[in-house]
Length: 445
Image 1: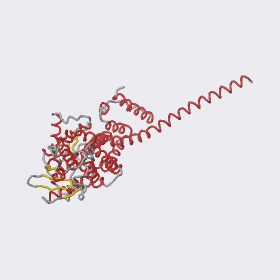
Image 2: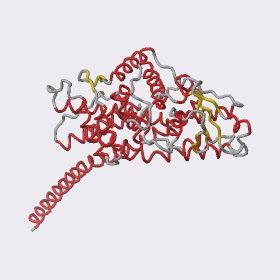
Image 3: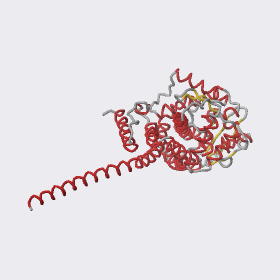
Image 4: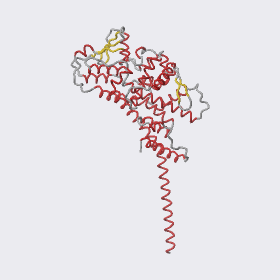
């Protein structure tokens, strides 16, 4: 049996159980779920299973759980995985005097993919983009830009900004005899990989374009960011070519234009649906959900925001079922964005790009291989691919546990009904036997 047939069998079985419980036959086998023929990504399949078993509320719970508890739980696991990538065969070698004296010099544009360091952390936008505004790698970088020529320190790094060249010189603040493995271990331990407010802001901005519009980003800037996202999305689907098909480039350009305008149109199978959210409501949403771990609260907040942001759409003639389908589509798109943004946090964020630069310098006698991010990620393919698998495993396991919970809830009444039917069958048999025995006795006597 092929994988697609096994997936169809799952939906067929679920449908038969639901039909048995509700005593109707409206749940028929269908190939409408695209996840049936998706052999690479298990997440869409699990989401379709959940949607079939429990509907919109289950998808909303998943989204709320990913935004809440999973983000908090992922940090230590991702740090462990990242250390495995950076603590390699040269771990016991020393940093050496050349590296500790000269460090690496990197253009800001090669580590700051999203233009974060052009935004003041204390501004309304900066509060969302940076998440935490003090004692982080990102805040230290911004301080270095403000104080050109002054050495700023974060963890095992000293950094100094050169305004005329728009570059950073970043050097270890350890002795030349320090071990390479200890150097990267300390840096990863001290660095915040995922700030919840920053991550959720990035996810929802990719959905609405609110921050892109407020920052006056250009179409070219957003286009470059979306190219990198698409490369990562392809990698998560086992395509490590880092080559994007021409038709996808047209789609990416169209989305870049919409994000810059702060109004994005989605095709959810029921016609085109525009979505837009002003900055105040966007900021309120992030403030509300970033401080919570309650999946139902977070899911309801996002659901209400989707209703608000699409209130100008023509949905009055849609049935309740169609409206729920539309909302399911929005939730699943946001989950897809979340997955890619998680990978970005551990592969293309500034604090990670600096590590790639450092490692390449140590491996290539002082030569670093950082350049335009959308073109150099293939140089770090092994590391990014391993982090991709780690993130997909975390997310799939999280969804699987909730899916199993809902499947158990579905099976309980089915099992109860089957047991009752069996008991009734046995009862009828016993009554028949007793009746037959009585007739035999009557004949004998």
